[in-house]
Length: 348
Image (cartoon, rainbow, N blue to C red):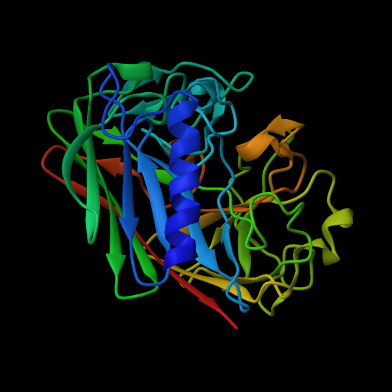
């Protein structure tokens, strides 16, 4: 634990010197650390964001495996959503509008003519309150989203809990309750992972297994067509483990697609031996290979480029509010929304 403690302290000091805060700054923004016997993970209540996760490889070498920045100001100016909780509705809503109970709701368009990750600013760019915190167990952030925020109906209470489970698991629970109006809710965690280390290069040599055979195809603006397509035998087929880069050149840009699934994924970097396993209760996961990263200066001055990290965003289907055949994301007053993830980390 000595090495991991030293590295996590260096990360925290760098963040503080560059404009972060150990307890709180004048805006009430802080850094919160959870420490298990196997890994250390840090968060901030700005965007309920995961800042870092430090764990050993098969030889005992410690690395931060989460892409991100050294300073709070960089997170405030971020367009990549590094490590953030996104919502009220993650992913895209076509035409920046939807109809619910006979009312047309027009949203803020921040991705061409579409709404991406709840609009701008979304949940990733607000300061969350700290509901409870224990460095040996959990941290819970809360946010009260107001009626009409980015065009969405109704007041919404949102909770995000990061919790240690045993020695080598991290649990994440995203919760919401509609207080007075029916509203769509689809929260997601937008962490970029590189199991070889955040400053190691790209993730094309990582092995990945995704436990489902269907995706929701998209048009040229990344809005689902409404089809749910079997992808066995295609470049999107990861039912058996294979390297991410093995067929990526058959795609125009890289992977940025929603898989329809139950069990989620296993990712392994063979050089370091680090392995990530993911479970979730959500109907889909957006597998994204950071296709749009373009010389982003990250931690320690390392420059992130295309394919520097991978995202596994467990969620409902994109643009579900405009596709009646997709699982509904509507939460009615008094109903409870919950997106649960469990990550297990090993190295061998």
